[in-house]
Image (tube, rainbow, N blue to C red; front, top):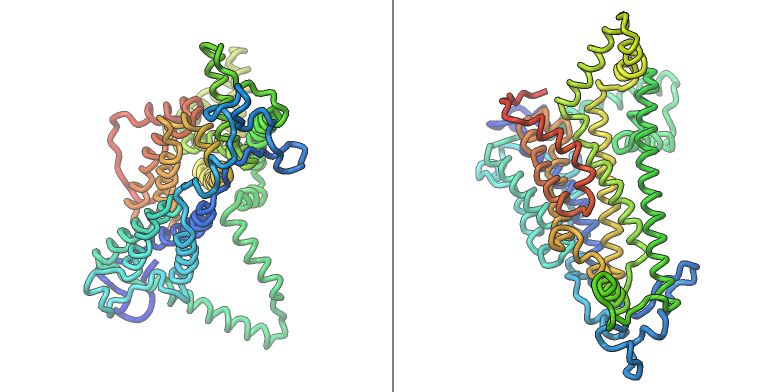
Length: 502
């Protein structure tokens, strides 16, 4: 990450190690700041519950049945059990949004991207001949700390503030250890010069260069390879690994099925409740009810008083279902005990193929053989990375739809999900889960791992926080986690281990 050209100017006491991690944190903080800034701005003017719901026939906001509106002359509809439009007007709702904090977050997020640019900004630019090196202070880290403090004044922006404070700590650690380097600028400049000379040589030979459009397409293709499943598919095709392609298709198909199946359930639920509110089929007369009937009736009262979910909620829940799947799968490819037993089972039973026992031969043909031939166990790390990217995608989309739903139906959302999570801590546990992901993903790239393996190793141990709060956050994740987390616990034990770079 560091070094290259310029004599001793770029040679400090240590090469860039924490600097690389801090650089990734800064880019992650920029993304978080920009997106959270948008929601912080939107949350400043939330939508109140005005006794209207979105009809499933596409007609837009439709008033609920007149018997649910507050009216002193109707005995079944009193102040505590009916809808009153000005009860939760926009002016009376405070969900910790702020327009100026949102604008600040958006601006800081865009500015961070410019500052962290490795060629035109100050990203990974740490010479030894400036005052900050001798004083062991990171100017960028100090800037991120100062801009991160105001972000704690609003709810969504507070998460970006936490990310910037962590970036500050990591960058200060880099200067504390006297790390220095140019971030590879000299190396890239040399590569550009060689490419320029090669281009000039081709021009002399009459060889035409690619068009600007072709270059843009190449860059877009490179982005797709970095952030999608495309490189895994192309690599499998190039190496003629049909089994890998098969399992990729199966994995993507399961994700698609999980999403659309959960989406259909929640869309049907939200539309059904909305139609019942419009038609007046919901019973809110709870005087003569007891037990479960009383609890159901009181839930109906909450629907009328606080409102229902927005159309964004089903998409958030569908993404959450996919997160259940992927968060359960993500540890399986890196569980050494499981991999060892799968390999041993396949190899051991394959030796029985020549045996005389017909049952052993049948097991070998139908179980052990396919296990060793068609299950690409050697691709476990690639599969783990693929699941990690998929988890990141679902987490971002899940958060987006929940934030949009909360802006449009904050009172109804809190009423509906007040018992979701442990003790109603859904939002808090969600933020902690995202923070654990921020720490893990920022230290996951290869150049961080190669620079200082301990940063990668210990950052990955935030998975303990990740899974602990995921169990508190998701109402049904414990069902998905029984096998994978059980495998982790059984594989950990008290066995000593040695940390070695790879």
